[in-house]
Image 1 (cartoon, rainbow over the protein chains, first blue to last red):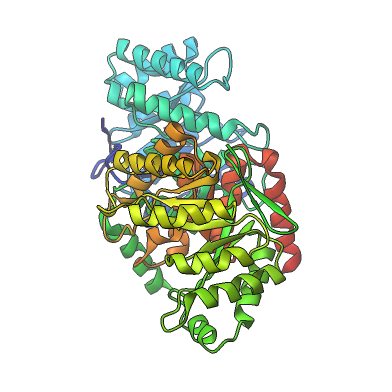
Image 2 (spheres, rainbow over the protein chains, first blue to last red; image 1 turned 135 degrees about the vertical axis):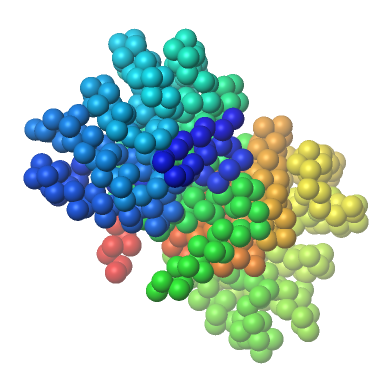
Length: 284
Length: 284
C-alpha cells in the first residue's frame, strides 16, 4: 500500500518497499521558546530557514505546527503553510489539535496534504474526517480514544481498525490513512518502546497500513537523546514503520535511517548510503 | 534459557531477559597487521592492553583468536589464553577453525569457556563436540554445513536444529549451544541482513537458543562502518540476538547496545544508560 502526498510541484510516496520518509519536525513551536517568541512577533525568518535546511538535509515532507499560546492558531497556521510552501517543494503535513486551524489552513495548501491528526475520539473523527475528505487529503490516525492511551498493542490495533473504518465511511481511501502507533517516553514506562514496536508489527501485518510516529518522544527525559533515538529508529523500521516525524538535521538520526534503508533492502548495495557519505565528506 | 560462562573468578550469563553480552572481538590478528607482526615476534603487550581496555569498556567476555599465518596456531593460542586470563576476570571465547588449537588451549583455560566454533559439517562436529563435552564448555554453532551458507532462513534454522541435536548426542546441554545465525556483508548481497534477522527470529521462536554473531561483518566494504553497525545492532537485538562478538571500544556500538537494552526493557528506566553517560562525562 502506498500513500501519495503532493505539493504543487512534487510527490512524496510513503510505502513499505520505498525509502523511509522523513517528515521534518522542526517547524513546531512546542518546546522551542525562541521560535515561539518570533512567531508571536510575526517574524517568520526562522520558519523559512528551518524549511530550507530540512529540505536540504533529506526530509521528504515537512510538518507545520502553529501551536503557540496567546495567538490565533488558525490565522498563524495559514500564515505558516503559505510561507513554507513558498520556500520548499516538499509536501506538507498540516499539524494541529485544533480543528478550526486545520479547517482554515487546508484551503490555502496547494496539493494533497497529510492532516496531522485525528484520533478515535468520536467528536474528533466527526470533525476532522469530513475536512480530510473535502480537501482530498490524507490523514494520520493516532491510536487513542476516549479511554486515553492503552499499553496493550491489541487494543491499539483495534483503535486503528476503527479509524480506518470510520475514514472509509467518510469516503477516504484506506491508503490515505497513515497510522501513528504512539511513542511514549521510556522514562515513564520501561515497556513503552516494546508496546510501540509490537503495535507497529500488528498494524503492518493485520491492516497493511503505512505508519508514522514522533520517534523522538521515546527518549524524553533521558541524557544523550540523539544516540538513544538512533537506536530506536532501526527497530521501528524493522518492525514496519514507513515514515517518522523527526529531525533530519541530526546526523545520528539521518545515518540511522539511511543505514536501516540499506539493511532492509530498500537501498540495494547502499547506493544512497554511499552518496550521502560522499556528500558529507565534500561539505566538510 | 540461560548460557553460563565462567572464568576462575567470574560468571557471565547470556540470556534473553538479561543485558546484552558484548564479547570483545579485538584479540584477533585477522585484518590487524600490526598485531599479527607482534604476535609473530612473541610480543604480547598489545594483547594485554586489548584485554584491559575491552574489559573496562564494558565487554562481558573476550574472544581470543590466534590465527596468524606462519605460526603454530595451537602453541600461540595456548599462550594467548594464558596471557589474557592473567589480565582479566572475564570469561573467554576460545576462537579457532583449527581443532588442534582448540584441543591444546581448552586444558589451560581455568573456567567454562565458550568454544568458537563448530559448524554442521560432519567432520567438524565429530571433532569439536567431544572436546566441548570433555572440557564442559559451551559452544557456538555456526549455521553452515557441507553445502556452504544458505540464503534461506528456514535452511539455516534446519542447520541449527542439527547442531543442537548432535551436541545433545554428545552429552552437551542444549543451553550450552549458542547459535551464530551468520552475518554476511550487505555489499555482496542486499538481502543478507534480512536473512540474518529472520534467522535470528526463527531460532529464538522455534529453538529458544541464545544467539551471538560477528555483527560488524554486515558493513564490510562500506564507508562509515560504525554508523552502519550501530543501526544493525538494534535490529538484531529486537529480533532476538542475545550477544555479539563486536568492539566495545567504539562509542557508537556501545551506545547502540546500551540504548537497545533500555528500549527492550532489560535496563528498566535506563539506569545503566544514565550511569554510562555519566561516566563518559566524567572521563572527558
